[in-house]
Image 1 (cartoon, one colour):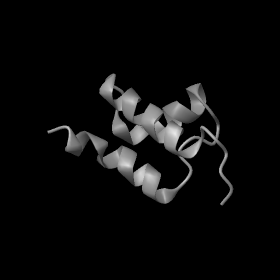
Image 2 (tube, helix red, strand yellow):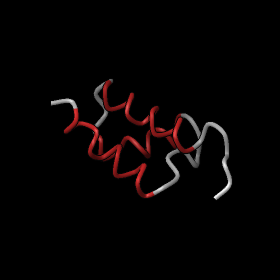
Image 3 (tube, one colour):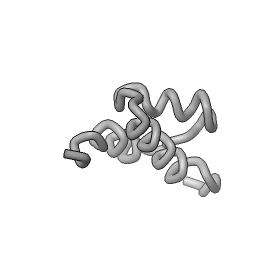
Image 4 (cartoon, helix red, strand yellow):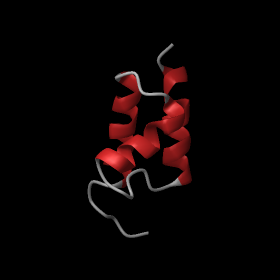
Length: 58
């Protein structure tokens, strides 16, 4: 995989910030892709992290 600066890890953080702002985790990747970059959150592991992120806040 080639690094596409600001896509994978940055997209993951943006999706997690959307969760912190009240967006449901299940739709946070789609939100980041719609509002930041179309390919934000690149890997399956990054997608899992976003879905599990709310559990880390407890």
